[in-house]
Length: 251
Image (cartoon, rainbow, N blue to C red; front, side, top):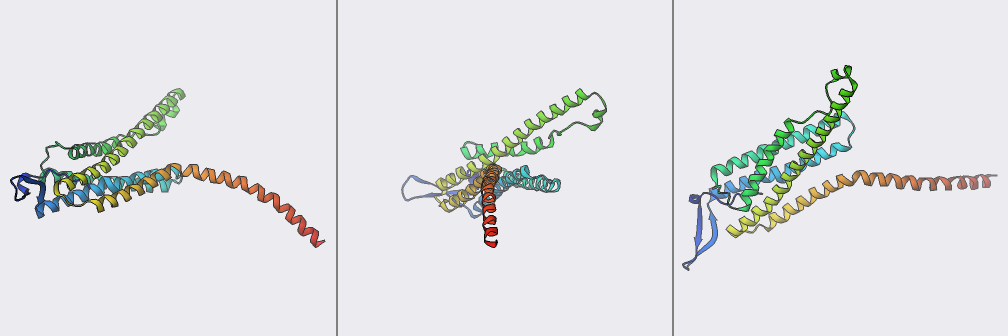
């Protein structure tokens, strides 16, 4: 729930104590409080929920061989990520209109980097290189075909790494900015954010667990298959003796 915590000066009030020194806490107006909540929800739904879900969806396609299932997962990833970009854009517009954007604090600077990475991703996705060259080159020189094919594979690998790096960076920075925003909100308003921190930590832990399980799933399934193959022959060796005993009793 990232928050831009430097709203317009005319929309916030500082509470004063009976002493000459003023309180450091900020008293939010109902309108400003609602705008902060909407901004926080949009950013949480974008970088705190939908983007991690999109990453998990596309990682599921690494173990799928069916073309139809691959297309379903790819378009699900695409729809989820586009929705996340639109929500982040709406949150950015809301902050530019209603909040003071001096970018003199950590939360706003990280948020600016997150917005830049978010909009860089679709541009990179638009220029995704193809896996192979045009089929008509097959009828020309074969070495030329092989060279273009290898060049396309190298470009595709570099593009995949860059796409993965930016996507992971957006999620990591966005999640970090959630905690930074909650901490800053608590310092400025003295409001308790502990329940939100606990809930968000539980969500992040769940996403991290699924992400790590996806990376180790193939290894665990292979190890399980090897273990079954090692145990199966022992079972087969005992079965002939049992059959022999049965034949002896029958005779």
